[in-house]
Length: 148
Image 1 (cartoon, rainbow, N blue to C red):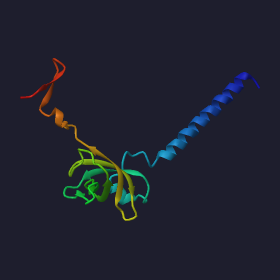
Image 2: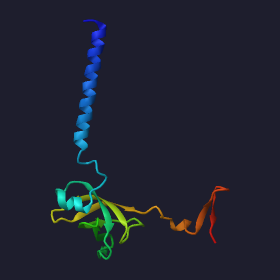
Image 3: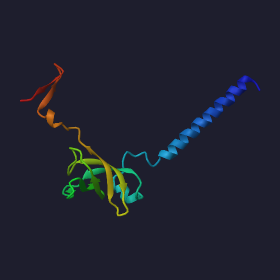
């Protein structure tokens, strides 16, 4: 067999291997492609208990309850179409409050409550840290100045 044919066969084998690896990766990630599940997705598609997912939505106003142990928080997450009960044990982020956005990492228990292991509080584009409130960026000097 000529060297030219050997290179052609090697290139074809490499191409087939590359396509196969891409298809395997795509099939493994097909259900995990979404950044998080919304409560409506959970209610319609269902998520098996114990499967690690991210649940995203808004914290329902009036649903935030702190347990007597001081570290457990119970709350409801909604996307406007469905609501899911959730629980978290630990220190909540500063931006976590009723009516704010949240992405919770964890899994559902057999009772249907989402047991979060990590909370990520979301904010809108107008968010300003407390330390910078009342300050504005001066484009001429490229410095922050106090707005009085």
